[in-house]
Image 1: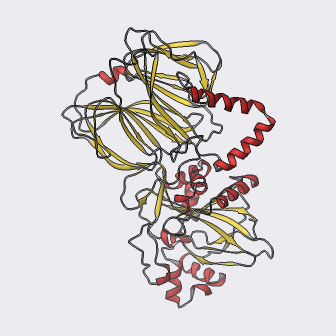
Image 2: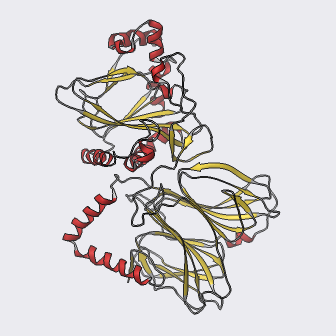
Image 3: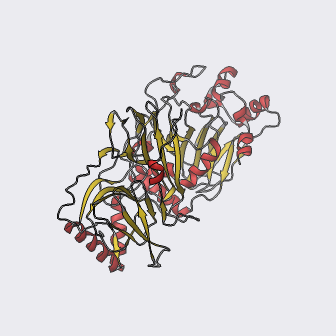
Length: 544
C-alpha cells in the first residue's frame, strides 16, 4: 500500500463503513452542528465530539498511520456538500504544500457514486508545482482551469498523464497526498452528494492557514492564528503546531471530564480505624480517549477482604502501594477456580472485564492498594490479554548502576477488550534526568514510588498518583538528590463506535429497557449501591 501511495498519491479502501454506519455518522455530525468550529472552518473536530470520534476511529487511523507513521495529528475536518451539476474546481491542498507527511481522507456519506465522486491526476503530487501557481504563470484564472488544461499541464511534468474518475461509493475511504491535483463535478441531475474531509499530518510537520484571498506566489501563510490540532495517535513534542485536547469521549455516567491530577497518597498509621475498608476517590469521568476512567486508593484492615470475588463491566488494574496482600483472580474467565498471588508494593494485576476477582489482607498490618478501572469503545479483538499478575516489587527495590539515560523496564503490553494497547513500564531517573514536555494521544497514569520529581510545575514526593489525560501537555524531571522511580500505565483507547450523544443514548436505552426489564433492575441496583456507598463499591458490579 505504501509503495502504491508514494507512486500514485492516493489509496482507496473500499467499504470501510456500511451505508447504515454512514447514515449514523452524518446524523451524529449534524446533531452537533451547533458547536462552532475552532478558529477556522476546518476546526470542527476541536469542538464537535462527533467529528473527533470519527477522526480517531481506528478503521481510518490504522491506515493513516501506515502511510505517515505512528505519530499522527489531525489539523482539518469539514463537511463537503455538492449539489447537482456543481463543480469543485481543480486544486491541490495548499496547507499540504510543505513536503510529504500529509494525508487527506475523503469519504462519501450520502449519494456517492462514480457520477458524484472525485477526479484526480495520479502521480501529480510529485510535480513539485502548486496548481494555482502554475495557472498564475500560464495567465489562467483558477475558475477557468478545466480538464483539457489539466491534461495538457500534467503532461509537461509526466508524459502520458491523464485524469482518473474514481469509482467510489458511500463508506469508501479515499486517502490522498494533499499535493495531488484533484477536483470534482457532480454530474448527477438530482443527487446531492455529501462527504467528510479529515486531514492528518505526521507529528513534527508544521501546518499553517494559507492566505487564500491574497493569491500571491509563493503562497503566503498566517503566522497566527495557527490551525488547532488534535494528537490522534502517538505523541507530539513539537511546538510548531497549536495542539488542543479536543472534546472528551461520550461519558458513561459522570459529566465531569478528567484532564490532569497530582495527588499524594496520604498513608496514615491509624487508618482504616474501625472500618474494614476506607476508600479515597481520585478521579472518575471521561477523558478525550476513554469514556470512563475511575481511580481510587483504599486502605484495607488486617485479616479483611473488601468484598467476595465479583465481576464488573470495567477492565481493571490493581496495584499494592504499601504493605502486603494476596491478589485473587479466577484462572480462566467464568471458571470460579480462584488463584492467589502474594503482592508487595509495585506488584499489580490486570483483570479483563467480567473476570472474577478480589483481594485479601492476610497480614497484621493495614495494606494500601490503588485501582484503575476503565471503559471505552468495545469491539472484537483477537488475542487479548487475560488476567495477568506482574511481579515488579523486586525490580522496584533493586539497586542499579547510574545510567546516562532514563532506564525503562517493560512490565506489560497487549490488547484488551477496551484498549488498542495497554502498556506498563517502570522508569528510573537519575538526579537531573527527565523528559521534555510533550502531548500524548493516550492517557497515562503514574504511581510515583521513590525520589522527588517535578511535573506540571509541581514538586511531587512519594508515594503519589499522577494522571495525564490524552491531549494534555506534560513533562517530568528528577529534581531531587537521589534516584526516582515510578510505574506508568498507558491507556491507548479503542475508537470503533459511531458517536452517539448522551441524549440519544438515553433514548435508545429507554427503548431497550421497555422490552428488557433486566436493564431497569440493573440500573436500580446500581443507583441503590451508589446511594448506600456499598463497601468495595464497584459501579456496574455483578456479584455471584
